[in-house]
Length: 121
Image (cartoon, rainbow, N blue to C red; front, side, top):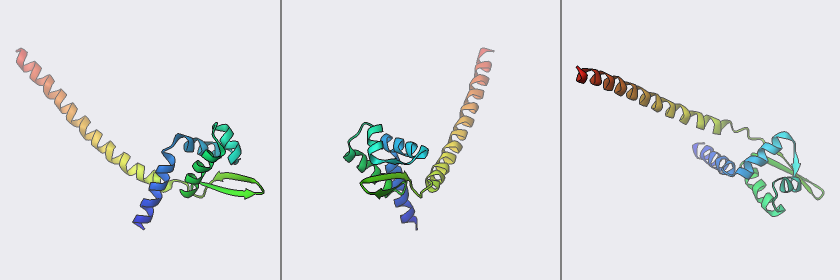
């Protein structure tokens, strides 16, 4: 289960790492589109767009259906819940570390202020 989840996270984050693929997801969030339409919108070749869609499809983020000669893309079955949960765990970890750092800095400022007062007298 953990290895499977890790592989899913890896595939999703790899797919999301590319700005064109993120743009494709945004576009498909508005409406389904053919690979030809996506290629035109992103000023790419059909082959290039097919590769991007293939990566998104392998990650479960996009689903395609071929009707005749047209391959239509739509958002896939994955909702990125696991990815959001993973990010949230690390956000909380970093937030706690930054809160601790803020406390240390505040203590140093108080000490510096106090030491500055005692030296002047």
